[in-house]
Image (tube, rainbow, N blue to C red; front, side):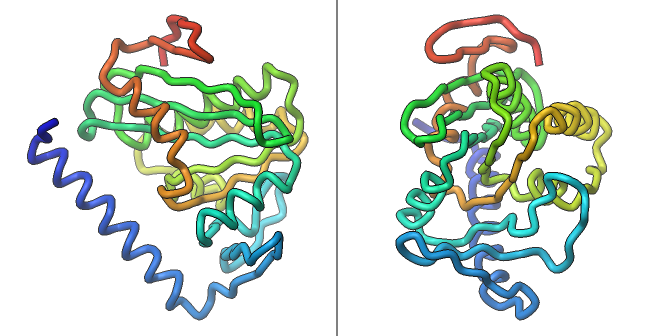
Length: 223
């Protein structure tokens, strides 16, 4: 499959930013690592200061090899969301997707959603919003969330806003949904640990706007 120059440039930029991001975390002396052992080290990088509101997660950056991470999140025995957004340009045809795991970490609900013309940030945050709504409707009260969009997760944990009004509108909807959970910890992970959600998001990035597929059942739901 051939890619347009814009797609190639967007992918290249994404990989360069991730590589630079990993180097930054290695060299920043203010980000002191905290280790959890199960069965190997899981490195959580805390932010530089703490806020007090409910559900704020002080250890929101996870940097570890994928095997340790997979073992660790299953050991938490919590309903778990992995979410992602996919954009074929910015803005262009976009999709969102995610996987919601049961507390044992094995049974799951998968969804893909065609979003039409959206920016990448809109696709990411709509993917998280839809995943949280599915989890809420299943009666989930305590939740852990993982995604590879650092800007979305950073803004949620630091309670800041975007410069784009349309993204902030979705963010406001998401925050109101998050308040319906008793606890919700949201973590940023690297792309290599988010492959299942990435596949679900990419499935629907080229199909009709508003087509939502949950566990192979189709619905029409406009974003």
